[in-house]
Image 1 (cartoon, rainbow, N blue to C red):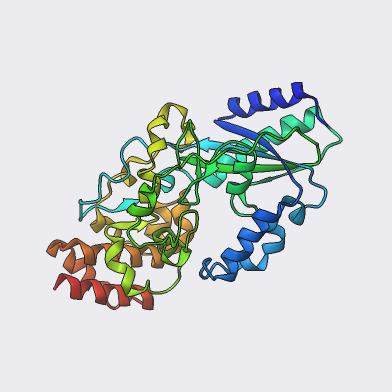
Image 2 (cartoon, rainbow, N blue to C red; image 1 turned 90 degrees about the vertical axis):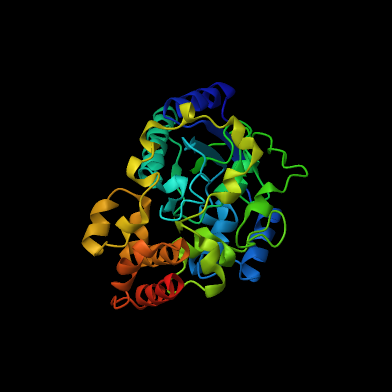
Length: 346
């Protein structure tokens, strides 16, 4: 077992690197976590995210991915917003971009800090081995974060911190070292159901259960092709992701932008952008504008498709000419969305 002094120093180093939460958990399999994952996939609630099914054995436990792992270091980095994410809900000609995507790509920022922490640890324990992960590997960061005591999975299934609310990017380090595990964080949701009531598409069939197929974040980011018509009006002016269930969480009153990593500050042009400016993007313009942004991963076509649904919901005659110009777009999902928006705008 690693001595407590090294563990305490590692927490301090993590804080110095910009992490606001750091906890330790065992890497051994947990039957309850594995069972919940199996149920989620078995019910098809992952939608078209086939990669979750393809690597479910590796995702089910840290040792399923890396048998040599003994401990998990769970880390959180704050991206607390400057303004209320719901402030633009009624600004029909503005586009709403999820808070996490308004700044630099968090994969780059978090991974750089994780690698720095990994180098620090290897310098002190040269014979140990480790692996770092940020979102793209088959790692269940949220359940592991709960097991490591840095927060709990709320009724919206996201991790909630008593100190930083719902605004945490999560990373993990798997290590061959045996750290003393922290106590799992208790659930603090109580009788609150604010997140459940706020969801515009009823994506929660029950508390603590998410059906991604109904989630606006999934529909605008992961879903390819036309979005089912039953959800289009509910999209409102959300063009990339959705913060509604996070934004209403009462624990966010403790979130403070003073704890946000400096490199995660939002770009001003994405905090309240004009919807019209996004309807003119070709592929090159899209790539240039979103260079270094997580939004770039969805590509121009999916992004403009989302913007057209927002245009159709806007009721703005001023957007009609831009919509009309996209009805002949080479991408079938874009042209279909333009037809739908044109009919909505009359």
